[in-house]
Amino acid sequence: MNETGYGDGGNNYLSSVRQWYNTSIDFQDLEDAYNITGRNTSWSIGGPKDLDVQFHDNPYFQRNKNYNSLNRDRFFGNFAISTDVAKWLNILGKGSVDYYTQLQEERIAVGSRRVANKKGQYSRYDKTFREVNLDLILNFKTDITENIKFYGLLGGNSRRSVKGTIFSATNGGLIVPEKYMLSNTISPINFPQEFLETIGTQSVYANATFNFKETYFLEGSYRVDQSSTLPKKNNTYTYPSITGTYIFSNHIDASWLSFGKLRLNYAETGNDAEFAVTQSTYDKFSNFGPDGIRFSDENNKSNADLKNELTKGYEAGIELKFLKNRIGLDFSYYKTNTTNQILSIETPSQTGYSRSWINAGDVENKGYELSLNVIPFKTKDFSWEARINWATNKNKVIDLGGAERFSIGSTQGIGYIAEVGKPIGQLIGRGYKYLDGQKVVKANGRYEVVNGATIGDVNPEWTGGINNILNYKNFTFNFLIDIKKGGDVYSLDQQYGHTTGIYQSTVGNNHLGNPVRNSIANGGGIIFDGVKANGTPNTTVVLADYDTYNAMPQERYVYDASYVKLREVGLSYKLPSKYLKNTFMNSVIFAVNGSNLWIISKNLPYADPEAGTSSGNLQGFQSGVLPTTKEYNFNLKVQF
Image (tube, rainbow, N blue to C red; front, side, top):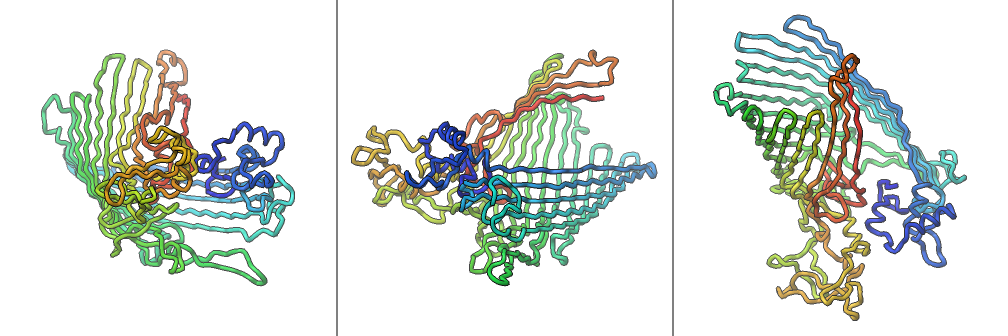
C-alpha cells in the first residue's frame, strides 16, 4: 500500500496523505465508490466533466488492485569440524552457505494512474543469491611458564558470493485486464535488465594473547585481506591491533572494590568497495529506430585507482565494580580517523556524469561511552537492577583531498554536505536571513531567503538509555527507556503539508482573533515573527495561503530530532523446577514482549524522528514516512 517512490497514482500513499491530500475527503465515500463500481473512482479528477484520475488513485482500488508479491525459496546452514591434534593445538574447520531464489512481482491494474496511459502493467524481478564462507583455524594454548599463559590462533577465510538479477516488464499496457504475465503486453517488451555480481575475498589472520598472573594481558592481531572489488594493484590490504589490560583490583585489598580493570587499545580496520565501481560499465537501453542499438556508459563515474578505506582508532577505558558487584561502572574514551573513505559524490553534469567514486581525505570521530549498572534493592525473593548507558560522538572532516567541500547527496533541494572543519551531515538549503539574531522579513511580509545556507546538522549531541529489570521469585519484568538528544531532521511532509494546508497548524486565529485563512480584507492573514531590513519589528500582514507557505525557507521545516521512547517492555515467568521432575525438560520459560510502544517525548510533528528515507551516508530526511510499528510477541523457551 505504501510502496517506495514518489510518482503518479499516489504509489507512496503516505506521501499523498501527509503532503497533498484533500482534507475534505470522506474515506468512507471512497470505499463505497470502489465497492459499488469496482473501478478507480477518485476525488482527484480533472473537473465535473473530466472524471479521469489526475494524481491520486482511490486508495481502496490501489490496495485491492495494485499489489506486489514476493516468493523466496531459501537454504542455509553451517558446519564445523574440530579436533585436538595435541594438548596445545586444536584444528577447527568450519563453513556456511546461504542460497536462495526469489521472485518479486508488481501488478498495476488497468485504470490506475500509476502508469501514464492507465492501461496497466506487469513487472517481475528474478533474483538468485549464493554465498559460501570457509574458515580453517589453528588454535594454540600453552603455559610458557608457571605465571605466563599463551593463547593464539592462525586462520584463513575464503568468501565467495554470486548475485544475479533479471528485471522485465510489459510495454504499453495489458491486453487483457488482470492477467499478469509478460506475454499479455500490448507492445513488444523492452530488453530485460540483467545484472550479475560476483565478489570474492580471501583473508589470513592471526591473534596472540599473553596472560601474566591473571593480572596483565597483552593481545595482538594481524589480518591481511584481498578483495575482488578493488583494482588489482590495490586489492590487498592489512590491519593490525594491539590491546593491553591491567586488572589492578588484584593488587588492592579493599572490601568495597570487587573488580577494577584498565584497558588501552589501538586498532586498524580496512574496508573494500562496492561491486563494479573500479571499471566502466555500459548499460543496454531499448532499441530506437531501425538498427538503433543503444548503449550508454555509467552515470556514476568509476575509479580505477580506488584504495581500501582505513580506520585507525585508539580507546582507553576503565571498568569498576563495587560492593560485591552491586555497582558497576564502565567508562571509555575513543578517537578514530577514517582515511580514504570510498564515497559516491555528486558531480557537475558538464563532466558527462551525475556522480563519481572517490577516496575522500580524513574524517575524525571521538567521544565518550559510559555505562552504569546498579542493584539498589535485593532480597531473597526480589531484586531491582538498573542498567544506564550514555554516549556522545563528535565527528569532524579533517581533509578532503584538497577540496574544501563536496556534496554527498541531495533530495528535494536539500544537500548533505562534507566540509573541512565541520561534521559530516550538514544540511544545506534555503535558509532565513538573520539580522542580530532576528529573522529578516521583506517588504511584502514574507521571509528573506538565503540560498545555500547551513540549515541543520543530523548529528546528535548524545544518546542514552535506562533499562530496569525487576525480579520477583520466578517472574521477571523489564522496561527500556531510549533517549536521543539533538540532531536535526528535514521533513518534506511538513513542508508540502503546510504549503497545501492539510495540517492543523495552518489554521487558527491570528493577532486580531480572526481565522488566519480569511482574506486580509476580512481580518485574516498572518504576521511572521521577525524584523524588517532596517531592524524594526515586522508588522506586514500576508495571506496564509499556498503561495505564502511555498515561499517559506526550507529551514522552517528542519526540526530537532530528539526523542524519549519506551523502547521495550517484557514480562517472563520461569516454571518452578519441581514441576519438571521426572520429565525430559530442564527449564521452561514463558515470555511476553512489546517493542516501540510509546514515544514519550519528541519535537517533530506527526512522525517518528527515527523514521527516514535514507541511511548510511545520507541521513536526516523524511518524506512519506510510515507510522512507528508496535511489535508484540510471545515466546516459549524449553531447555532439555
